[in-house]
Image (cartoon, rainbow, N blue to C red; front, side, top):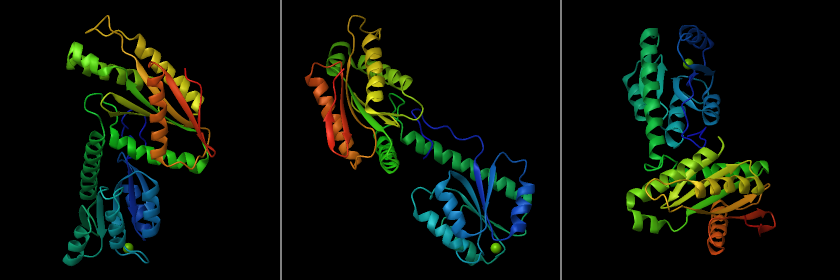
Length: 319
Ligand SMILES: [Mg+2]
């Protein structure tokens, strides 16, 4: 799953369909005949070119020739099927080979469909649409599995996945990155005094304020229980502190219909860096967690920031 911001990703309007064939004639033919389809048609003329493109782009369906010099279609199928990131991409084999054993082998390697050349174009179109439909459904299911049911924010498994991606990209490019952990103060007493529906409403209300405040590139998650996490790429510790402080204030000011006299506050720990640190993802979370602990110790309803860099962590002023 790529292209995921603070809110669940939306499917791009024109899905990419990659045609892989060593024959330029096939590319010309398909380009002309699929002109009116709402797809972004791309082409590769070899197996290795195809794999390179697929690993770098969000491909929705592959139309794959089997007989190609060098890496053939079977090898492409095998490679895509072995990797978690590509195993769900529907592949329609376009082949001049009519042998049933080729079909059996292609399906065995994960092909979704098989069309023999010369192919009927209206049939190809219909099969391509059906492959795209399946791709949409799989993507939707994957996305749902990474959402938190109560708050609609991303869940912990999505957080872990994005954390790894965003930190390695920040480290590689020596760019700022910050992560914040939020914990609602005295949450148990909300549940105890006003009942679990009030506790759920508090989680939903806080989630709404968090997701309303973060920017498109940020990733807001429910971390577990009454904890939330926000990943902030391209964000220095100072900017992260300002953003978290705005969220902290908006939660403290919010009116809660089921307990109008009882406000809810949040403690926030931030770990942020101006550039590369050499720290692994779990260390970022541990530093943010330690900062959160200090925010709690310091009296709650506050933001504590730890700045990390090549020379290790440094505690910044609380706000
Ligand atoms: Mg060929």
